[in-house]
Image 1 (tube, rainbow, N blue to C red):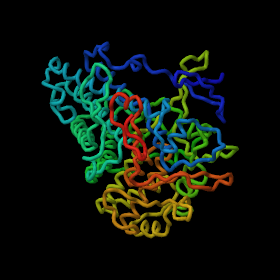
Image 2: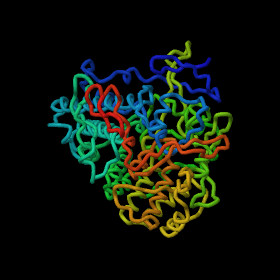
Image 3: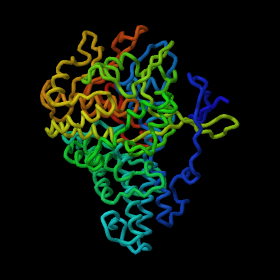
Image 4: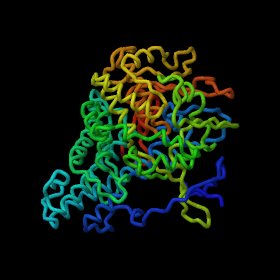
Length: 558
């Protein structure tokens, strides 16, 4: 039976797969299919906790971010394996198409999660008198004291605050320019919703990015002391470690380096090597996409801190299929910029390396990471939905986030130890990195796009952040090149590279790869201050009155 895919109200054949296996995942509990509104009766803490299972996004930003980054190239105008949606993403155009991975669905989905979190908070306030507490906000939860009923209430309140903060954080990082304390007060943010509404509406006043980050900070600080971990399936909720990883990433992006280090320390503990992904073990497994990708999202692994489910074909896009192969992470990128490029570890090899697929109109080099799952809505008709599961936070990313913050506070030796730990965990090497070794290596590498056509690749690109990183070639800049390069490999196919491009003002190109697998011509450049770095506000939302993001040489009003 060939499954058919539900997308935009139409059933589409899935016969384009190079491999014809698919996975059946069970449909969600009927409770999870309901949206929070006035028909739901929330009368107990248990009701609130169940309600909060719907406060996590079921639409992912990964495909938008990954295809807008420098992790993909254009494999020719005659390659048919694309869609109008993918064409718009790759070329940084305003997206007019709507599907499960579209900016519009991510926007809507995040605000629905925010509405759920707000309903949970309001319900907890209403339940407080019955629990013998003035308010869940004052309940001591994990810090001692209080009644038996107050701890679950405080933990639920903390989870709701974290879900609300996370949804706003992700919206800001997709739909706004990169945060900088120097410019945030003059940069458009995302309207921060903290009240229950009768229906989902959009505040036309987006406020400033400084406002948005201040409110995220406030919710984080209120939540972190009280977050619990007593869940039946903890890796699908904010546990303390997941919350600390979120705080680390947030304060890194907010340029509060010391706080980022502090929360990374809390997340990783005193023996971070025990918390990382065990790539050596993965290398001993059956080497199939199905086996490796299912293991990658295993909830029992210490490295996976928060797992989210999503309606998404990303498992196909970055799996061994020709699906969407017009824009791919191909051999040229792999050998010159990412996984297979000459790097500081020399001839050492990965425990679990990338896999290359080549055929007519196909040039993909991928890690086996996110699984392709299929949820049958009607098994008889063979219809249903693309699904995947992805880690929103991992210890491996948190380790590299800490390394970046350590570099930016001048603690180079400590940063080098973190970089060594990450490298020796994923690559079979005994090399111990030092600031001197890192500086010498990266100073020996040319910057990308230095050729006459401005299209040739290396692992190093010019950095233009709003914060000071010193002159090119000094220890700080070289170590940041190392952090960014390692994190690019660590998060390949997970969309995270896009946020580094924004934060560091990295200029990237659009180029066409010819039949020989080499860059043929320059098509476009995303400059440091290009307004396209902020994804355009969805059309329906703009129609509702929300101010769009500016664009060059086009009208900014509908």
